[in-house]
Image (cartoon, rainbow, N blue to C red; front, side, top):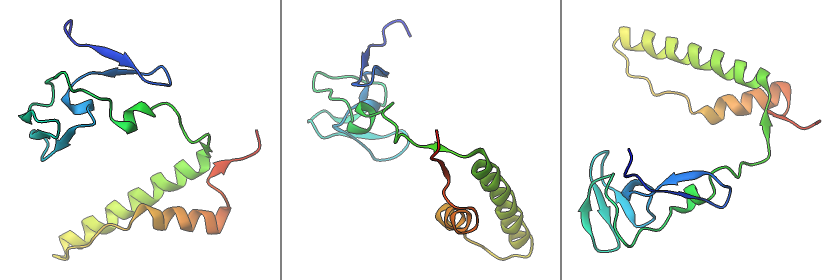
Length: 121
């Protein structure tokens, strides 16, 4: 929108100034936010004078300096497809299954193939 205000973070990424990007804002639900700076219940798009950029947004663009291997991405896509099929089959059988945490698949990859990251560049 034409009236939106944007600021640059320390890595030159544009961040929209609004309640959703404010450090004082505490989401209560997807549509309800509470302002710790005394504004009470606010809408996600509102903006007040106490706005301070969330720390996570201030670091957006920093990155961890690591590049993930394409083979790892392909592996994780395959695992996700298998996991979705497993959960769907369980539901069809009337069984409620919890999804396997992604960390389990990452550990499996590293035990089988080594690091997930490209280290030789």
